[in-house]
Amino acid sequence: MDRNAFAILCDLLKTRGGLLDDGNVTIEEQVATFVNILAHHNKNRSLVRQLVDMSIEFCRALLRLEDVLFVKPTPVPDDCTDSRWRWFKGCLGALDGTYIEVTVPESDKPRGTRYHLQEWADFDRAPRNHEEYFNMKHSQARNIIERCFGLLKKRWAILRSPSFYPIRFQGRMIIACALLHNFIRMYMDVDPEEYTPVTLDDLPIGEDVPNELESIDVVEGSDEWSQWRDDLASEMFDAWR
Image 1 (cartoon, rainbow, N blue to C red):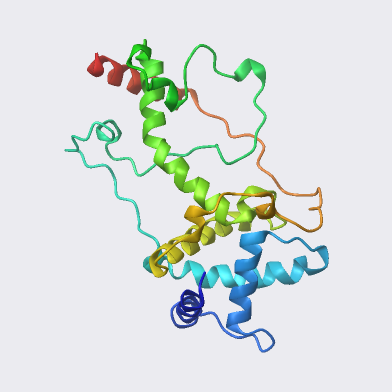
Image 2 (cartoon, one colour; image 1 turned 135 degrees about the horizontal axis):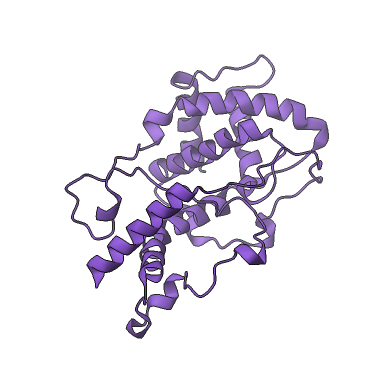
């Protein structure tokens, strides 16, 4: 972030986000500290309590800028004819567990069905059933989204490793990263992260995180929604054939 963008961010957080000097730390110091935490994920146990308190106040102010920095999704309209989205009328988005580290038992891993986009480049590998067709369309639709998340995680190291923040606060942290990412895209002519590959220097540094972290271990699907997905896949495949 250049100096001009930094100054604009501080002004927005003060005038529209309600961020205040606390008597000891200026707004500029609070912003610089928090952005540094997000970008490098420095971990220091002696500062954890102080950083958590400061981060909570900063996030509250930043989330008040949502109307400025965040474009709310709109549902897919009923009259949509775009082949990419017409099957998802009324949908705002999709939930994906890609960014929660899990270990899937061998018995639960998918078998005999292709999932990766590059496998569909050759027309000879056209989908043979409704499951392969659904996976192909799903891969095509999410490809651009994955590139966006890749850039987001490259910019903010805190998204690439366990956080010392409470689990109830980590959701706000992710939104804060997204809002700051949007801010940089809006107020800087050139985004340097687009041309900088991730290196070892980008990895988080500092002390180890305590083991007593709150975590989400399992997100279970339901038979009802699994059946809905299978019915949708069959309908899409029949229309394609």
